[in-house]
Length: 241
Image 1 (cartoon, one colour):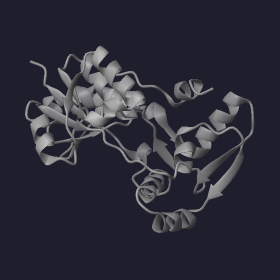
Image 2 (tube, helix red, strand yellow):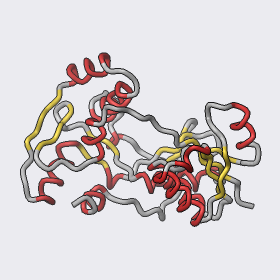
Image 3 (cartoon, one colour):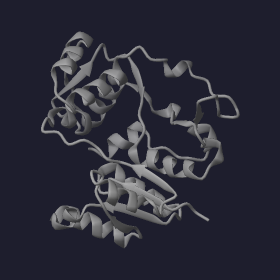
């Protein structure tokens, strides 16, 4: 029998993808919503779409312990997709909106990072729920096809739009200073940028994955689910043009 799944934050960008992936996988899927959300026309439309696609609603609030405990008691698995709200949107525009004239490059642009589309990440999260191989493990998602540096990413985008972008380089010291001076959650967002593009982490090209896809702490999704087709960086950029 498929696990009953409750998604908290199911009306957000990632939350909607989690709900869709859960329903598509055949899980009875519920979404925790606050009653005021239905008074907001935009949120009400999202809620209607989720329900029409097969999700059920559970009313509650993550800041109300009693309602939260009541909401989760009928679920086998609870997934939180609750994010942050922030008035400082410039970094989000930089991260999620495609540049047309200039682009910020952190560090020297050579550090490689792994890019995974949120839809693929949500599909894998749902796959892992009833997979005993993932129990008490970190699920690593490292599709080699999406290993890319900022320089490579910018170059690829320039080719697609037929235009050279002005590069604004931000040194690590400058970014670190912004992290220290910024309030939450902007400092957290900037810290994630630093960790992704500047931190001295293990280089991905040095990572090898054994045939059993597992170590003491984690499992590798690309080995556990070899038939999974990932949205590539190039495919994602094609959809932005």
